Length: 391
Ligand SMILES: Cc1cc2nc3c(=O)[nH]c(=O)nc-3n(C[C@H](O)[C@H](O)[C@H](O)COP(=O)(O)OP(=O)(O)OC[C@H]3O[C@@H](n4cnc5c(N)ncnc54)[C@H](O)[C@@H]3O)c2cc1C
Image (cartoon, rainbow, N blue to C red; front, side, top):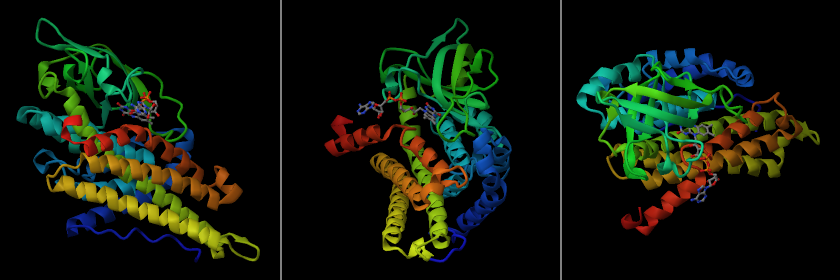
């Protein structure tokens, strides 16, 4: 195998517009994101300016309606954009995916008036979103959440409680928040769109994470946060349905990000194996290593095909929740395996921060946990296999 720069991934794209979009994203990834990724992940700096640039370039609202400032792109294109961004830096790819998740409630369940008022700024006006479902005592069992929203005499809602693990917590301009307004369980939950500067909303210091240190993950406190009823998304009691609907699509975003990280690790491993010599030959001459690289590449291609197949079902208006869970499960497990094997290809050097593969390995781990752990994905898939009555 030659020691050369990796070739860009060959992508099957549906339109010339999509091809132009991928070129634009590659240009931004190469010049604005990748050069600072290692240093900023080391220091834990969030690249807010990159998100402004993505917004100005029309890349923060890709799968949404152009009537409200979105890009009108099918999911199969949006996800390939995410993959390219995540390959350059997961903090950016995952950040765009979480922002898209945070816009889902308003874009799919908001009234026309709410959409006209808020969506343009969210999709193309430079704002950044966060999605608040998890709490300290309710992660996988999200329907047991305790954050409360209570109506006051004037018809406004007062939100009280603490959300945990919130990506962009403390820096987001808006928060899509699931809070309890009624009975215990999933039917007592309502969704709200809360501006980041609302009185009573504050964030704790970011968690000290294993990877994605540039992406702030923090507890968000709602201390009597008051919002009007015009900030309620969907019907009272519909919040859990909205949250899960957002996650079906969001899981595809996580799958695409995972393949991006895995591809970046494979590219590094192939280049290194072509240059590193042992026993008088490049290590890429040894079958033991060539087969390892072949397996890594195969898992990546299989993952890409799986997330694209699910995306194409979604684009065709067909059910895709089972396939989205499968894509999330397979792609994030593949990313964990591929990044671990990439460290192996580098030998001792792979275990140091001098090369990016150890960072990719630490980052891949998060993707097996976020937006439903991979155990939860298996539960979702198994429920679909058992038929509609068990869902
Ligand atoms: C980096 C990062 C970013 C995140 N960003 C966000 C965000 O923006 N918004 C948000 O709302 N949340 C976010 N989360 C939270 C994430 O969604 C939760 O961590 C995840 O859902 C798991 O919940 P938990 O951590 O409470 O683990 P738990 O639910 O306590 O699970 C612990 C373990 O038990 C397993 N388990 C639980 N129930 C079952 C079961 N029934 N069967 C088999 N195994 C089971 C789990 O798979 C896991 O291995 C983020 C988390 C991380 C790490």
